[in-house]
Length: 115
Length: 112
Image 1 (cartoon, rainbow over the protein chains, first blue to last red):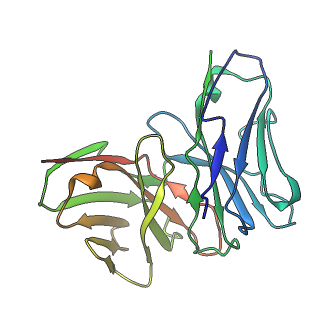
Image 2 (cartoon, each protein chain N blue to C red):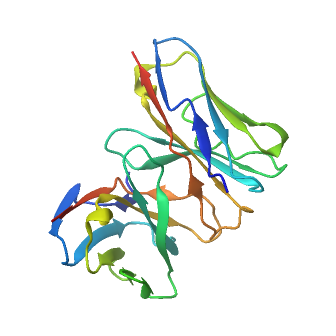
């Protein structure tokens, strides 16, 4: 079946503009994660959705970042008033049920460049 | 404050030989560890994991070793193949928490 998909694959924007990044998880997966990978760094946790529970937003770096997940499926990560330090690869992952030791499946990422 | 460290940014190994990738962690509460592999322009894919109740887990050519007293784990690939060339990430979590804490990755290059 289809894996996790993300769009756009690349995004170049000007400082101060808003961007929206989309994630389509694997069908049937109830858990969804957003990560960010800056150049030369490991993945940084941003936010976690599990079913209808309130999301864990503890990793969001500032209030310019927000995410939603509609209908328990597609998720959108929004960055308002982008800054150059927001430039990174944004990765989305999903897993079957949010059990702590289950495998997370990743999308290819969105490469964001803020000029 | 990096809780998971991969101190070698890159590693070059001859095809057919053993590749050893290392990872160190600082948080003694971590009790589940994973290795992910990442090709360019793709997301990471799960490779192998180990629980802290074990010191070794093997899956085909891949073996992960865990030394809890040293807070160190390693991934062994034997024999190394050209398709193994990728970036390898070590990640850790506390069993009660879904958050993965990631290392910065090691780029493995398998030379023909």
